[in-house]
Length: 180
Image (cartoon, rainbow, N blue to C red; front, side, top):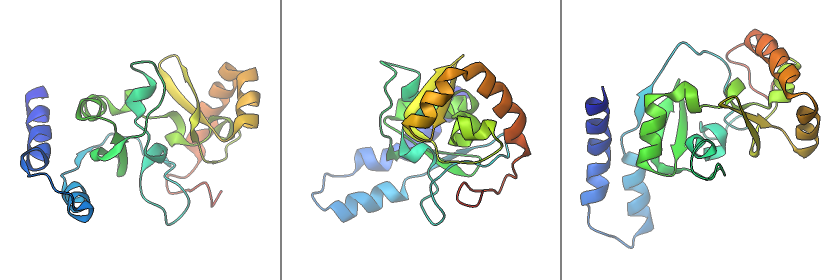
């Protein structure tokens, strides 16, 4: 499987790596936009936060979810150049290496509750998750709506996780936070 995956990544990046440099931004954007997106899927059919209705279908506001777990643990923005589509939603990464790690184990790196606010999920509601307001707990990534909510979340993280694990699956898969 790793050889197949690496071959797919190499094929996806080969046209970009072998093209001549250009100062024309539109041409670079077009080349990047045309890059192949690797798709992975599992049985998870829950709502994923990708921004308000009509926005791009990009999870975690384009932040690299692998960066929360590796290096210094500080989240970094991803790039369209390194993207993986997981359960129909794009995830962006800062490097091909991080995209490969995500593709190999997406459930390990994807945020809990589809990137919605973990505290809101404990209430059976959807709210946007801010990628800069987060916690990694027991190897899982949780996002919060704002600093005030995160303060509340921090008062009983295990209790809120337990409640959210019960409530979030009850939310319809096609629900959006701006509809909830």
